[in-house]
Length: 119
Image (cartoon, rainbow, N blue to C red; front, side, top):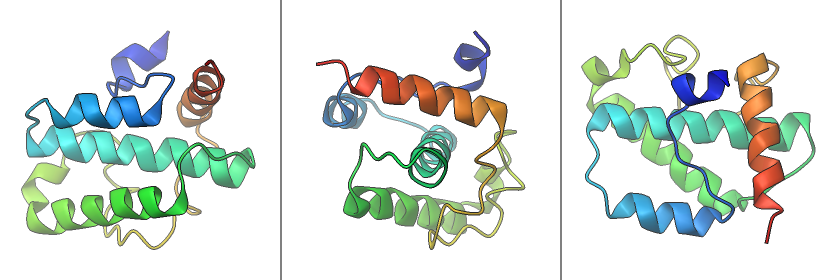
């Protein structure tokens, strides 16, 4: 699948499990920016395009604000060839205007929704 090469965030069936696993791994700033961009794309697609949600609004906003801060503090680290132009000037205010109809975003969102329902 295309997703393995384009999407490196290791989603599991439990979002909290991912968060705890990732907090144990030291990431570079570029990796963290990529992770947060991926989360913004997927969870915004789930919310705005598919009328689904697997993270609460507080968590989404926390991630969005962290991404905005990372990008503002590290502008040179933002050129990662992963939706760079779409996240240029990101404020974290809304994910509604991201490329949510992009086939890669939609496919990854569908996959995440599917595995999140597995208990």
